[in-house]
Image 1 (cartoon, each protein chain N blue to C red):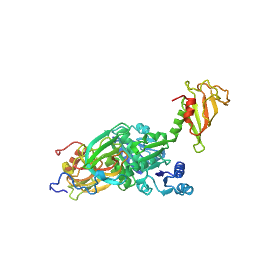
Image 2: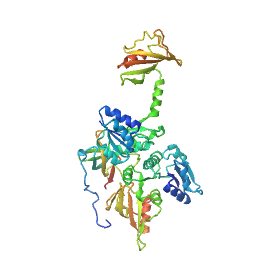
Image 3: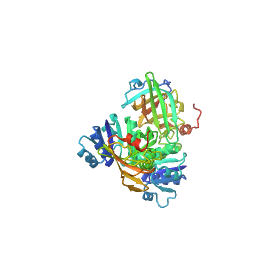
Image 4: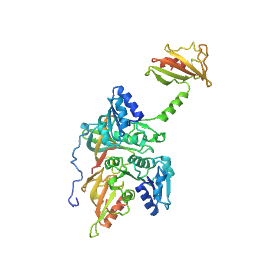
Length: 103
Length: 222
Length: 217
């Protein structure tokens, strides 16, 4: 890891990811996709960050409460999300999930 | 429905009993063994979990991963907020209900902490009182007979069809009775010949589903 | 710097004394006034009695978005509430909450609050979360050339990959788990990174953390 060897820019193999269309609600699941929508609602009393993630099978949403911004999360970024989601809005939605930014 | 109640104090205990009687699957969580046993002794169908509701492990033991509702009703607002956050964040529980003990903390009981519905008893009482003094609407003050009878109250607005009518001539539904009038701060016994004035507070006891008829007689067509 | 400490126990009182002696503007809050006895008779900074997540009390303590807030009461729940109120209500960026249970700490980290769990907590550690650019190092090799330093990733570095920092990041603590980074690993908010380098290299890293970019992209 200190080496000078060139590594590929994108980490392509993420163990344990599930296609969004197959992801079950109410169980820990890992999805990966691209950030296609970002909305920051920095209202003074209820700051919230909401993103939409898309993979080849569908779209999911992730919400972070109490955040006005999250460093590094940007449109087009590839991201890995791990958490427990609901289906109540029709879309798989995660609240405060773990995330990993990919290149 | 599968319902987890966090907090086996007087509120949690009451909820566990009532909801269990309605046939729901109830799981009650508390750190206090005595409080838990008070619930379970009288309600053997309620499942109890001894533990701290603010711990993911405890909520897992209570089956939060497939619960329909979590009610965070401990006597501690901080605990209720944390339980709610864990319920939404770690278990995606569809409905989270939380109790607000101190109205000064009420502002935190919302999406930020995973709370869908919060109930603040002091606040609720105030709202009910305010509603009760609102002129022109029918307020149900009390439910009696397991909800089969109700004591209703309406303060007659200036456009009420009841104004100028005697009590005998009011078009009230059959299973109802005017039990008292409050006029200028005095209780007036409702004899049939009393003429109703704007501002009179009319108390009606009724059985059955007669709200609509009462409304038409005392408030007007709406 | 304006610093608000909530919880005048062993850690809180020692932080208050240390920071006051370093010349910071310190206010310490506790529910019980008797806790302030720990500060000693010669303590000169402000004390406030009350609940640390009460908005009015924090305003009275002079909270602004440039304050630093340390939630070090004996209750995990109180600490996380205080930390979130400071951040979300008042926009405070330098916030740290002491959490006794490391597993809970990992959960709260996901809400984006910097936490310090029991095992690791000392005043030094708490301060390092609030004041990351102090040049503090954890270990120096016997030849005195290389130092190992722990730093918390800031918005300035979040989104950049390890390679682009030009620094030897040997370990990343993320969401309670440790991982060995590759050059393409992307740094994120709240990551705790362990950097190995010479004094000059660490200073360069600290500059990047502060948002003053060096020669690197």
